[in-house]
Length: 273
Image (cartoon, rainbow, N blue to C red; front, side, top):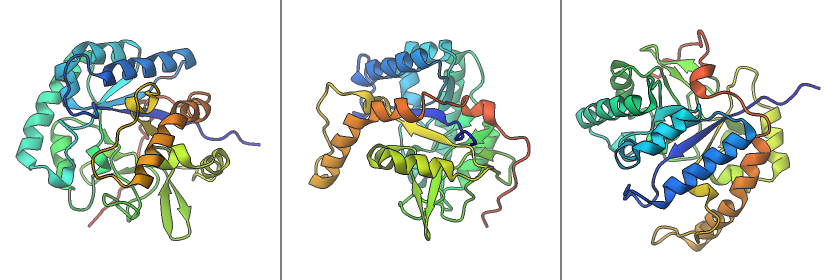
């Protein structure tokens, strides 16, 4: 029987409070993630918000020193659909240079905040290419979310400008495509369902999962944004209780290298027009 495909562990490195002040709790939680990865021998890709480089430069240095990949997650988690192109170019250039100085190597990867690379925000691809990014991990090939890109392929592909895209893994459920290796879906779906989706992944897919440092915070009571419906608050609180254990079971027992080490040679082109 063939072994299930290995999965790259990725971390969206951000401060959920939006303060990015020295000593914020996300820093300690990121160090917890580093310890867990070190125990497992796992090397991950950390998509860092640019403001982390300003407020916690030692954290970026330490992540790189552990052998993990440093990639970029935008300046401050503004969706691409709400970005101003010239500001995005200016901030991304400065953040990329600072992250590279801290990490001691080039930054090859980009992830759009909220996975917001959609047909409405394709302008960002040429900016990213101009700045020297080699790949993106920003597309959700589904119409189940506001930022979905339903027509995008599920396997890695090449954009017209030559950048490579690692789409979010999704499982086909009839006419729907369900993200299942990150967020609420991953944490709340039964283990046997997630295992089944992994086994059914297409041969040319490259699987990756995503988590956040605060997913590992079991000491601090979960606090949802004001106005969040009760059922969503309950689901998010339950997800936090399950996150660390589920990540250990699915990702850290059989993991793949960071995304920059999995760049395919010549994935097919996708022309989104």
